[in-house]
Length: 259
Ligand code: CAA
Image (cartoon, rainbow, N blue to C red; front, side):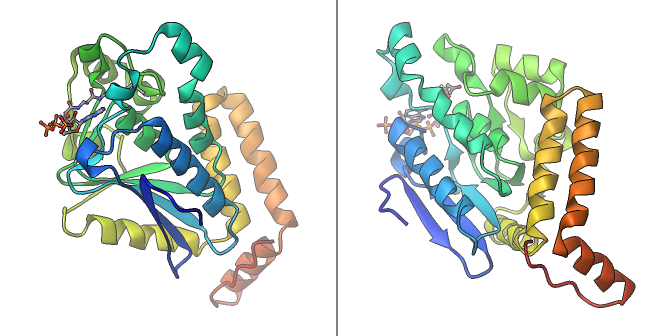
């Protein structure tokens, strides 16, 4: 793994790759250097056969307080257009293995958007989600108006984007933005436990499952259903399907080969 300055990367024995955003003095503001390192590390872990699932986290105070405002303050529209800095974020979405955002503290602006670009969000009790860009004279630029609206619905997304309403962990759970909440003390440990369970599952099926659920966000229903059915049929070409069904019938535990 390359030497990174803005993230810490740990390859764990249980097939989990853990990435910690590590700019604590700047509340993990997502500058270009951090995002470049993050997508690089995700890409390396995605290509690593010893890894089955990734967790992205921050610290107890901040998952991330958004894109780095100091880096953008004096940018012109043309600077933004040519640097196209947000295109880097699309690479998070292109990762094939499951990625979990473990959010403690604030996930604001780009921080909330980064968490939503992951496959699921697991929150600590102290997590807070918001899109405060309106206070800066701009709007969310990395998916906030789109993914948030799909996750929590129009009325709440409008209130968050138009009027900087923040959600507590409990509200985020109630409105479907996060899948679980754990106490601040157990949050990372429990998220890593869930990640290791996912990482131990049939790899080809995992990849298809992630793609199929994501298709529900992007495709009309008929196309999504067609994609799902093709993926389902395709999995009958894998050794893992034979193994999984045979293990069930013979009341034994399956051993996945990833082929
Ligand atoms: N960019 C750059 N630096 C940031 C930052 C950000 N998004 N958020 C916090 N920081 C820095 C602060 O400037 C401060 O640095 P200094 O010590 O050098 O002054 C340090 O982090 C600690 O922050 P605070 O002193 O403000 O800490 P606080 O506890 O009083 O407040 C906070 C914490 C509520 C997160 C507050 O810092 C804040 O509101 N941050 C900005 C949140 C925001 O507007 N995010 C949206 C960014 S734009 C965006 O993300 C666009 C997009 O869609 C891609």
